[in-house]
Image (cartoon, rainbow, N blue to C red; front, side, top):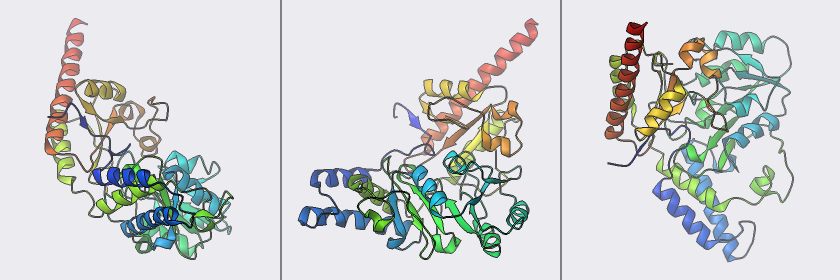
Amino acid sequence: MSAFAYLDHNATSPLRPAAFDAMVEALRAGGNPSSVHRAGRAARSRVDAARRHVAALIGALPAEIVFASGGTEANNMAIAGSGRQRVLASAVEHDSVLKSAPDAEIIPVDREGVVDLAALERLLVRHGEPALVSVMLANNETGVLQPIADVVRLARQAGALVHCDAVQAAGKVRVDLHGLGVDYLSLSAHKLGGPTGVGAMAIRSGAPFAPDRRGGGQESNRRAGTENVAGIAGFGAAAEASRDGLAVEGLRDRLERSLLAIAPDARAFGAGAPRLGNTSCISMPGVKAETQVMALDLAGLCVSAGAACSSGKVHRSAVLAAMGVEDAVAETAIRISFGWNTDSDDIERLIAAWRDLYTRVSQSDIRQARAA
């Protein structure tokens, strides 16, 4: 048995062996993909191959893929590059969307975390200024899937463009740029077993886009700067390995059934809506999230609190707040997320550790109540 079980794939997924090998090969070879000699042509070939693999993962054309430093940059590029001053964003978007559009009009969600389509329609027709609508495909905390086809339908009726943050969805469920009908779609390599520090934005052919930097004209003049060849090669390999998605829904359902049987008052957030099969956001009644994360870590299990910032400190979950979850309940929620190397032993280990913690806390509460 491994020394620990890693169940925080929505934060970052361990590097796939194929991605590691592709990166090592690219690093050994070197070369600048803008150079015309043989080393440069070999580097360009690696970038082009990766572009094809990433495009295939999301049903895009290779020419529609622009490599970036990650999902955050891709989200920022889409918001700024669309040319639209008016932005509508769902209440459960990632900070890289909400902070890049601080004046965005917020689209509310229901208690399951699904975007309110009637509210979106009202916002779109409020005035005639053309807008950009930004709605993620899958939420990073709850795994809830959004009705993007309906969002696109309403947006088109109002002449709006659509951006979709698909960072958490790609490699887990089927993603199709043209099937969804969106104009911009964001991706990140490290969420599907690629390296950190590389991602991509897909720009639908014909969609407007203005780059935010100038330089040597890389990425067809859409993102200047020498490409991260090794990172891109790793991204391409991870994308190719992720084409079949993740078949882990059975593990998630078994986990949630077991935890809810241990603590009937626990809540699995977003369970009434379509969700990613790899994500469970669940509460442990009476036990704060940070206590759970630390206790489970000591038991050799890596999970996360519902929301965490770059400093690693736990903050109130804006996603659960938008869903109307009471603060006292939201602060007991943790996120458990599976990936390409998760197995049933990991799940059983988590169930046992979760039960032990809940039992200890419950017995302590009983003793304190008797003493009072």
